[in-house]
Image (cartoon, rainbow, N blue to C red; front, side, top):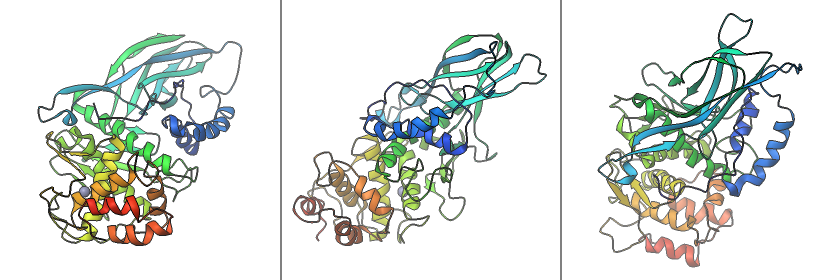
Length: 407
Ligand SMILES: [Zn+2]
């Protein structure tokens, strides 16, 4: 399991509704951890009021509620647990489901309802109101979360899907128990599940009330994060900026949540900056310990720090389970200065730390990033932080110095 995930949100019924795109996005905000729940409840109120139960809308006395319930899990190689890559089973949170079946009197199976697995325990309760029994009922899962993020096959460009066993006939609730993602595509759901951690942190910092990844877009007009992953993919480990703008992952990249969220961190910075990133020369073979360029160190360090911050530690973990610690230790035998990725990443984590000078989180940094582009860490620290009211003296400056950056 990952280190220190955010606290699970309050238990909520995972009853899904086919609603408008914006309402579906709004529902994703219900998935905020407890700290963001108050804001989310305001949005939830209007949604609940306008939402019919099931897709019918007609409220005849003979309607029945047909439900399939269960919990979605995936089994994966857990790089966060070390180079042995032990197998672990996790719940798939906020994953899209669809309820399919053939209502009595109809000739074909069709989609009856849609929703998300529970943001805390991966549970689902897929229900539809129907005049009578439904035959051939099943749940179809998709490797996506609302319209905010999705995982696609690099060849077919389609999302991964699978269906639960089909129930021949249902006129009430059928408990499916634990539903396991098929092994050949489990990593797609691991990526979907892991992206929650970054989305929740980005959402907490988004003061606009939009359910999108950043304040730059309004509900109903969110940019969707797309990850390509395949069980045999050998090309990957990058954000294809300027091409597909997709995150491209190899088969093994998905073993590490840090690797998934590092690449998503590049996409997030690109979104915050209005679909652009600063110049980052000499970045082809960047490492934590060697000097590259200020732009390269800034963009790579942001991605490193975003992943560690979202997962609640100070590490970068490779797909093979090896890891690097982003320490505040000026004696570390690394190159020095603000063109060294590991130095900048460690400084960012210290600024955002629970006992740090920025109030215990990254929220004001994310907010300032959504308003102006910092070309490198120097620009961020000396120009953009003061404009945003963030400290650049005292403990904040001490942190920078601890990381061998001489401002
Ligand atoms: Zn990177």
